Amino acid sequence: MLFTEEAETEGLFPGYHVNLQITTDESPGAAAVSQGQLFGKNIWKMTPEGKLARQTVHTGISMDDLIEITSGASVGEWIATKDHGQFREDTGFITPLKMGDIEWKQLGKYDNVNWRRYIVTGLLAR
Image (cartoon, rainbow, N blue to C red; front, side, top):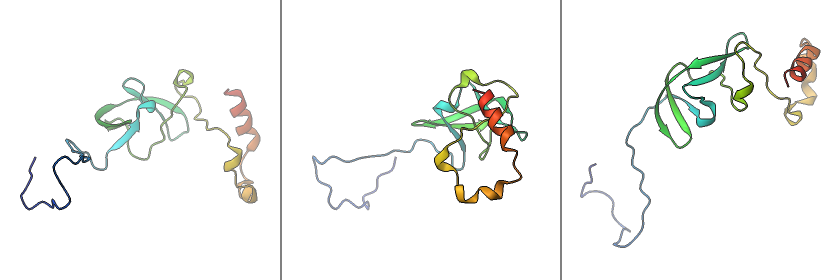
């Protein structure tokens, strides 16, 4: 640590409390996951085919709930979370239907989607 005499000290008096944050290590631009997305040394991520795959990862530094991934996953990949006891290799990556998130006025733009297939898949996966 380096403290210089030129540092701005106006307003600092003996007996005052301060908040101090010390950076001991950093990893700019690193991929990171939350603790809840890491299952031992593995994560579950979505393959290009939309299936779940268990991937072994190597971790680096951590901060609060975030853990750096040094290899095994990249920034921008979809990572599964919660209910990891139900995850199975090569099963569909299913997201819940949230009625409040549907843009009801734009449903026509999805006319080429096979809604029945996805609804049945979602129901059977539960």
